[in-house]
Amino acid sequence: MIFDYYEENKPFVSLWLGNFENVEQLQRYVATVYLDFDAENGDLEWQQKRNQWFLPTNANRVGECELYQGSDESFNQFEYDFECYFDPDFMEVSFRNPTSDWIQLIENHSYYAQFKDIPITLTQTYNAVILIYNCAYDGHIANHTTDDYSLDYIAHFPYVKTP
Image (cartoon, rainbow, N blue to C red; front, side, top):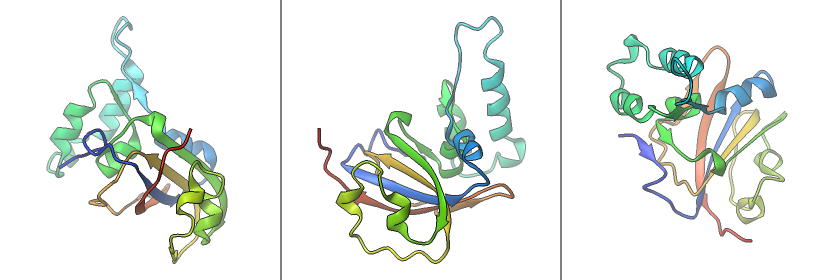
């Protein structure tokens, strides 16, 4: 099953922490690629990215077919790795100095004061933060690691949107 935040539109924020080589690598990882319907021959960048994600060797992956069908207009690597559709407008991403202090990692993100007192103990250092608001991710994929990066789903927390 693919987790779709649109079905779960709740006052929660979901948190992932990870390690990336640099801020550019993190930004490429979460960058959404959109199909350009006005392009003469389709959107080559979009098709190349889609072909990189949906490899024949992954055909038996749970949710692969559903992910492929859902990627017909836009997609990004994060969505693929965690089988999670979301609106990129509700995502905050930051690259930090490596630390195992989760308060330092989330400090200065929107609404962090509402969930900073939740006791979380990290067993390793991280340098990347991904927050998705209005999303109560279920954690069915807890982490994803490659030779280039690693990312762990930590938890989701309630928050109250304020003007």
